[in-house]
Image 1 (cartoon, helix red, strand yellow):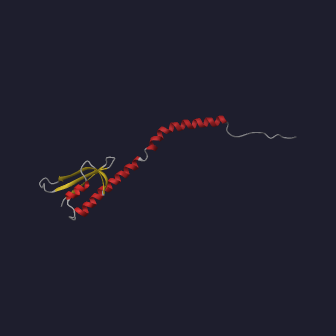
Image 2 (tube, rainbow, N blue to C red):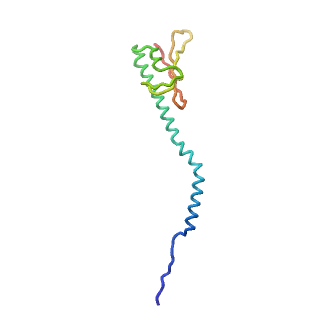
Image 3 (tube, one colour):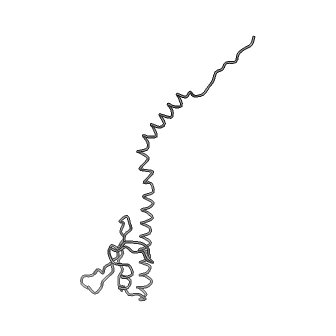
Length: 137
């Protein structure tokens, strides 16, 4: 007797594939609102950190200039104040790029008004502000 091999086929039908694709599309559409914003704004903290570090570097450059030139009497405090920039101005100079929030003389000791200091405040684009006080000796 001759046996006829069975023609049993395995695999997915077209209907099953379409159902899987539709279910995957629905699931993907539900995930987009949850993941969309987090993926598009994931770089924001890195940008803020880079801006904050650049502002910190600018203030360190200003402080180094003060320590080298003003303390050694090769530059007077008035010229140092001018080099930082006027309050409210955006600066991009040898110190770095920053916005000057404060650049004014302040008196620390009310009993001795001749003893004044220079208060400097600089900020970055995100609004973080750093302050330093330089004493005229």
